[in-house]
Image 1: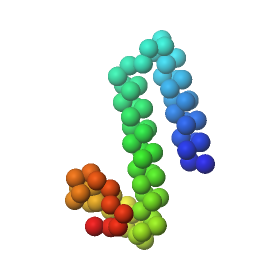
Image 2 (image 1 turned 120 degrees about the horizontal axis):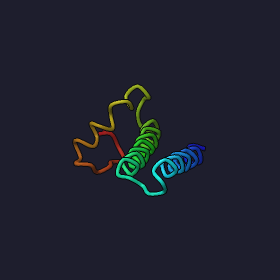
Image 3 (image 1 turned 45 degrees about the horizontal axis):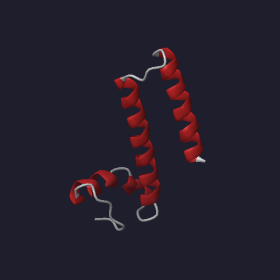
Image 4 (image 1 turned 180 degrees about the vertical axis):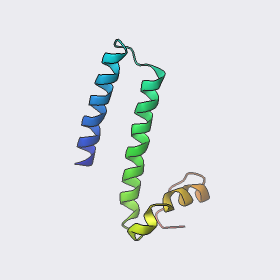
Length: 78
């Protein structure tokens, strides 16, 4: 359900941005789209971490995990 909502939301945002910019994407539009992808990835990473950690630890744990591993994902908490 999340991915369906993410795709529909992205389509709406892209359509609106292209309408307002005359059909040509601008750098701001591309930054907005990149932010959408990063937020979606963060959401799914949080959902994955709740299988391994209590929900209260999930809030800050991804930043600690990625900073310790140089951006490489681990299966178990560091």
